[in-house]
Length: 329
Image (tube, rainbow, N blue to C red; front, side):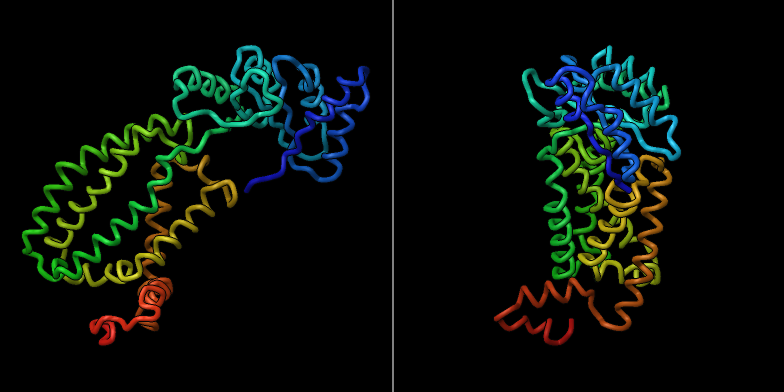
């Protein structure tokens, strides 16, 4: 769960502009803590125009003696003197942000083109000191391809249904799908996995470079091979057992996104930093199992997923549906 962390930089800015020791940064921290703030943030810049290194040490000492645990977050660019200070003070978290010459405040995150070597070394050193690390990262265009790709896969499934491929396991289309999946999808998925794994350690799973967008998109065709192998070799009973989840693709996709977001992301339970790859995969399988059970229950009672029903109603609004839909096919 995301918690409030109060930034006391401006108190130091006012103190420095006046000269002397008033207003006191420590007094401001006490007021925030007494009011129930779960965190305090400072950003000691190289020009010391607000928070100074002495302030950082004083705030750390104050929070360490408090009656309750208050998170201490130090922001800044990974310059050597700041990293040494963070390793000395050992706050709860260090948030690494890029600093542009002449900026008044932080205005952007790290570009995805940031060289990983120096950043990885800084992160490794902080983690070795027991400090949690967070990064400001710019959103990249590659992150926006997910929804169109999912829609494209859903439409491909619709085409397979209408062409009769799902009912004909011996259709030549499945051999073509298998070849595409193995020749295009498999190497692309492997390349994407390598890029994601190496850069996830630096940028987090929510951001990846533009160069990963191409293999990421092409890797989705590996699902063609999965579908071909499954439909040609799985028992009819297994296909019938799994089919309810496939009959509610939009509902299940959105529910899965909401569930995983709530469990893994900072706006929810923030489990992502605490789960390994195997644990995350197990969580995904558990959510799918729950969705499969829910799909069986729902379709026995209503015959169609709620979002699929709404989508069909919107699609055919103001026009008669095809005869197949009138007959319930």
